[in-house]
Image (cartoon, rainbow, N blue to C red; front, side, top):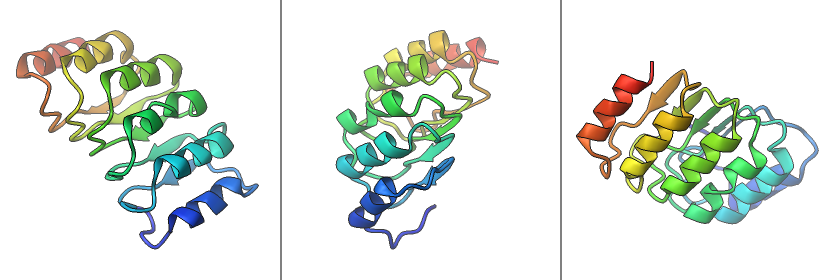
Length: 151
């Protein structure tokens, strides 16, 4: 995980700084990563980001997660593990717009339904790694169909 001592204000300062970032690991910053800080980081650093990890950041809501596709179109690796508010629609937008995405981690994204599985089958063909462990709102039948469909 990332540095757990970074505050929300610290993240805002990073967002406003001039340094580009290829990788941002914000995992496990449970209280620091908010919708506002993630949106600011994406707006200012998204063009250079190739890897983003926001696993286990429970304060993020569906609208903020849904903005990743707007600013992170160059992402190759994205970890949304534990994002219980990630919606099927946001996943569809990510896969549609982040065309370079090769590694996607959705561990315990329990709001995703079988609709997300069908989206992965249609738009996830370029993924080299996919983790959907503990996506408890998906059915075993859908997950088996996905396993047959994707290499």
